[in-house]
Length: 396
Image 1 (cartoon, rainbow, N blue to C red):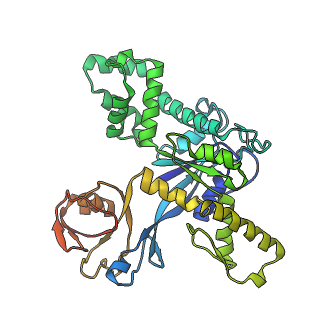
Image 2 (cartoon, rainbow, N blue to C red):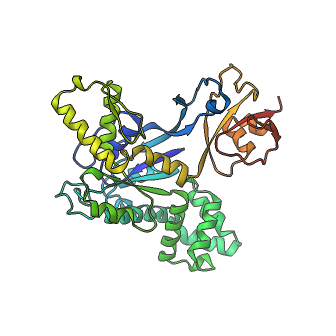
Image 3 (cartoon, helix red, strand yellow):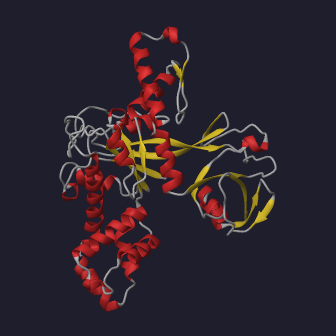
């Protein structure tokens, strides 16, 4: 699963990325600091089944801390987007191409209103962050529309004369974006397109592109720099209809993770607060900074960074966590590791989907699965539930 971190320049995208992954990314207070995309691993939390089974786990693909499984997700921090990026302005073409395979977006917005449309520093509150929401959606819609329109007249005439299914025609143009045929079909149903493809106008294609984006690239809004934002503006932004928003303080999250790594504080990402390990070791500046961070976190129940990652994964992308094992009695793999792996799958996935997730051969040779919690034998179409522990039985 790949989550794209998007937004205009200088809103804190790279800070958010660094805070979420602890990976190194160049951070500065000017536009286009990020030129090449940064990739890193974040994680989402899930209850580890070892608590229910009263065993000690030996994780392989995901860590376990105090009964919380940290399931990895891939994050992509790309160059900032500016108005008319779809026409090549700024680093627009590169930005959009980098996002082709993203499953969802986290749109980082400067809620303090201290950056203009192109990411230049301005007086706090002088720019309306709501404008950034609309412009970014518009740019991505235009990008998808542009891909559909390449040679569209010829394509439309051919599809009309040959009686081709419109879903297949559009899907063929968008496979490079990771768009599914089901998503195209759903977008066509809600877009009220003219019956004949040859009658589609520019505004029809834009409307279709917008609906395809919403279905194939869902987006959450991170209201970043929330600590410096006007409370009334935060309230207005958080109540915008049709948007899932999370207040975030990426700088605070990054500072806390670094302080925890240095042993100054005890902090687990996603916590609503932190504990200073030894106040006597802090200098006055450190004490002042930590006091400020504590005030910010009390206002928003944390920094919002981890909450943002989990809202994308569990709410927008409808993911569940499943634990495959080879031995359902001892919960081990072939090397004897207990509950070694945790995989994310979309809600509604079945036992065979899990088999393919583990290995193609397991999917191709699937016979049955066994639920380690109930010891019930199930077939390929058995729907999985969150925190299931499953054994896949396949032909050898």
